[in-house]
Amino acid sequence: MEHFIVSARKYRPQNFEDVVGQQAITNTLENAIKNNHLAQALLFTGPRGVGKTSCARILAKKINQQEAEFSEEEDFAFNIFELDAASNNSVDDIRSLTDQVRIPPQTGKYKIYIIDEVHMLSQAAFNAFLKTLEEPPAHAIFILATTEKHKIIPTILSRCQIFDFKRIGVLDAKNYLKIICEKEKISADDDALHIIAQKADGAMRDALSIFDRVVSFSGNSLTREAVTENLNVLDYETYFNMTDLLLENKIPDVLNAFNVILAKGFEGHHFINGLASHFRDLLVAKDKATLNLLEVGDNAKKKYLAQATKASIPFLMQSINKANECDLNYRASKNQRLLVELTLMQIASITFDREKKKSANYIIPATFFQALSPTVKEIVKPLQEKEKISIDKKVVEKPKPKLEKLVLKSAKKRTSALSLKSIHQKKEVNNKSVEENFDNHPKDVFTEEQLQLFWKEYVVLLNKKGERSMASIVGTDLPKLGENFKISFTVPNKLMQDQFQKGKPKLLKFLRDKLNNYGIEINTILNETVEKKFAYTPQEKYNKLKEKNPLIEKLRQTFELDL
Image (tube, rainbow, N blue to C red):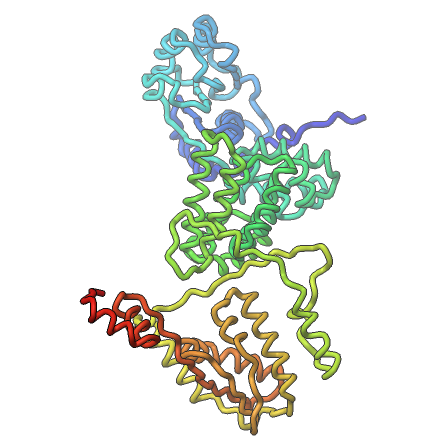
């Protein structure tokens, strides 16, 4: 059985060209070697797994290869000394090193000393190393590497030329993983490699370790589903689906989806952080100038662009603030699940329109979620069978038995009658009514019973949309069919007549489409009844009694009574 070599060792860079994501540093080092402008003490600092030690080894090999009489295949291994300061951090270890520095190299021009994890040296070892580092022999070059530059004493830092290694970008790590997949003959989804690169958090060594783990799990075919399952990360599809539910104000579905996430073993803190990052990515995707900040795969980028068109900037900003507040309060909360659920309900209520101004922490009341009534089909079915009318299945379909389908009654925001927007809207309605001409449209014949059938169907649609005020007005009476398709509808008062006039264009369009008759007109008939007057003041009550019995006035005058 062949010995397995992990990818982090197998694909360790051997040349500066192979180093991922550190182009500025590798170019600087190459030019310094070519121009003989290399410092004798260098400090490589940066996060783990970004190529510090690899660059130090490549540099150590390249320095001596500049000599013309030596071939590029010569690695000058005897000229390179590597010391692990984590296990050799005493004064004696440094003194032994300084004694070796005095001896010139047998071959080549330079002896290179690589001290890894140099921040682990003791204070005494640092002090013993100071003089040698300040005035090293001409044939000695020191390369120090550390992940914690702040732990190195300033006197050491001032004697070194410092190179700050940055975290490796997600796209750079993903592209390098693609190259390895081609060499290993492994087929991998672009999104799968992207998730691995994200999980590595800027460390190429971590990315390669995760890659080996996933390949052991799924074989020579890496899919997004397999990677998310093996790494136990929340797939971005989860966040896309959750955001759709939040935008549609479906609080019951949101809570059920969150329960499924918890059932899979994910923490609420992890989920709410990921949701905040998702909102941030949607905000970035809304502007072409910031689109390059979206570090996702090509397939995911298309989905982000599509969903970004649905979500408004105010919604995303408020959602990010609420998710951030939840993140800050999560550890201190005694009921962490409830905290996340309240946050999700508040986010789902942001785009819900109300007639009254709502507070920042507004949540849609439970009364707005109710089960669909099956009575619609029971009303429509007898008429449908009698007239053989084809009715929209989505409107009249009866819900399955014992299955309550929760529907959100979303209310449309009203425009103030005193605002400029309302005047503009009235002008648009008037202009639209003038421009519309249905002379060449069909005018099929229909019966009054058919008209009343679709009238009731429109009432159901209004209730489903949450327009209960208009639904109650339309449902007060049934229309009457007159000559030349003139429909008369009776309303009890002037206020209802005015409200009906505002919603009449939509009703007309619905009836014209359903009955295939564009000659329909609706006339409203006002049938106001005299309201009964009630007596409230003492004088009004006395007058009422006097009308019933005139002798009461004579009694008052006889005894000189006050009211």
